[in-house]
Image (tube, rainbow, N blue to C red; front, side, top):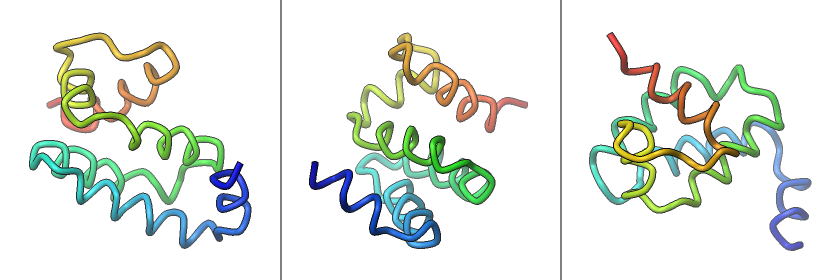
Length: 92
């Protein structure tokens, strides 16, 4: 409830800055690199709903996120599209 209220009071600009910072300061360097690059390339163009989904993704454990993004483990279905987009950011 408090989280939903905070989201309503946060401007889009502040939300993007907060998500960018959370993408850069993950805890493990690999996720810092993966998510900060994704954030820089995509957050500004994402819809509010997509930003909300990304916000929820950032609450997940780094070890799980790393395995999902690198394809070592399947992501939960609700994050599949977002994880795929993050993974594609780094495919050559």
